[in-house]
Length: 381
Ligand code: GLA
Image (tube, rainbow, N blue to C red):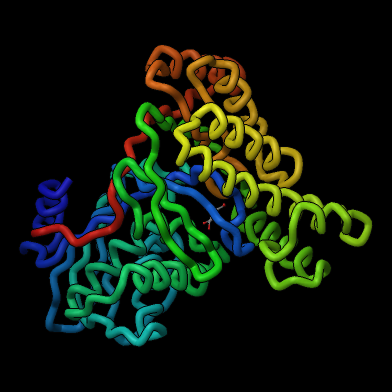
């Protein structure tokens, strides 16, 4: 990747980059929509991500290019206007530039910038957090600043919440920032506090990307966020993490039906995350798998962010013996399913599931065995 990035940078800007950074994509292992409710979540950084190369310019111009889009977007460093249409990808680095002063950090003036990705798009593997963190690292290095990993993660989330406009929690940026090979990142989203849990030997993760996306996915995410906040307010707490499965069940007739179901999913999911952490530490992958599948069933019935495509994949995967569990990963309403399997699950089993999916839905899902990887970092040029 690095050689390809340097070559693309040279071909686009006619000179070599001065700074390079890489940030990984992530899988959400368990903890669906728990993050912005103050709960806990487990995720893993993967060995694919976004690379960004940068060289400073003296004339104040900011020029952005990417291997995912044609052309160069040239902007002056005077303003930070949101971009639309084919240029809207630039809102990720622009959002980071807008966020830096909020954290009392300096902003680089002019530069040439090239982003390159080996993350499959639309798979729910969080290419947006990856580009935010890689951008943050190169902008900070260009201005000789070395803030903590927490700050980098917070800058990325701030960019997503306030510039891109998605009210996401800390999961994506936190896992991209704190990822560690052969480990899961555990985030206690109050704080937030980050730690890692070893992924037991013999555990394998696979992604099945349906390439489907609900037309209203961004609006639906915000709607779920709103229902959770409404449920918390009715329950007399700031965030749902302060409620328990018992207090939510006792409020069944106080809460409207939708906020009740969302709240029940969140508090029970938080408890599943705790149980999954304990089972991982004990190396009990069968229990972890059961919890993953229970998480999916709860998304299906209570949070209502699954789809027929995702349910079909989960049903087929859990009926395949070397699979311990399977669930939708990420926001939902389309996207991907992840499966936790033993080493006996391979291409043959994966292709059988994909073929059944194709027969039903007329399209082949992308199948991706996932390797865990390290978190965001600068790379020697
Ligand atoms: C998306 C968001 C995360 C998290 C998940 C659902 O990936 O970006 O913050 O809320 O959905 O768990």
